[in-house]
Image 1 (cartoon, rainbow, N blue to C red):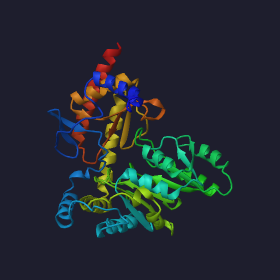
Image 2: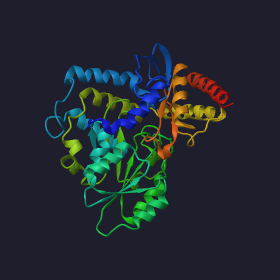
Image 3: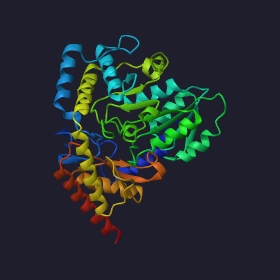
Length: 397
């Protein structure tokens, strides 16, 4: 038996996707022109699927900070945080993040994926129970598996279902509830205030992954919990540097007085080389800009409104109310793949999302707007979606 035989079904689906055009899971951006534009296969392309929410990948301050860090501190740390891999930069960023979030402590991880792994593995063990929103990100599911804790899923964004399941909790079990602020596929927002009431009722702990909402939601950009006024009821917050902060890495933060014990108990934190100096330096600069420039949030919400209203006006079926993630529902996988290829031909890059990576088996064209998008660019994107709508209608006729 070939060791790759187990992937035969997946490989077969991938081959069918390739028959319809470009490989959507291997698109190469040949030249990055800006935070919102690139050259793809020789075509000037508007990027509407990058999660570059605040457009800070080309922030001059972040770039200069990264360059200076490479010059003065080298290209990498060559060690884990508990060995030789903690630099002054790491501690400085942790202190700045804790202050920004209004939390007692913060830990920096090498990737956002590892932030979820490291937090979940550190917080939960075989004697604990994790109550998990069914639509949670793969990194959260992987962290749950690695923790060895019992996992109980509850219906997506359903506090009443969580309440019923927590009511069956056994005495002596520590319960950790995990939800996301903004869900990355459909663009829907969690009712964190309601979840917080349920967790308090049952004496559980609440962790919120603000990966896609950090920098965008809330008066200061701290996420959905801030926007809903319940930050104090969230015990642990997790996020990534790879979205609004335009870098690589992740963080976990809390005001629990014993939180820092995770530095010696979380294996994904303990046994991974720490983030390189350039990444940390650029994130520090980006965080400072988010803190002092609320206009970035105003711009992304204006752009989200323009795209959401425009797509709805063209007759597309949108999955959620307005947010920086705007998911366009397609009737089936074949149509979704064809539509994705057609948009790429028209100079618009979005994300193709198909099962099993989507909730409820839906097929999506997933858009994410940026504060760096100009209104004219969004109008161009809408014009090309309009052309797509006409071609889809003609095919159905």
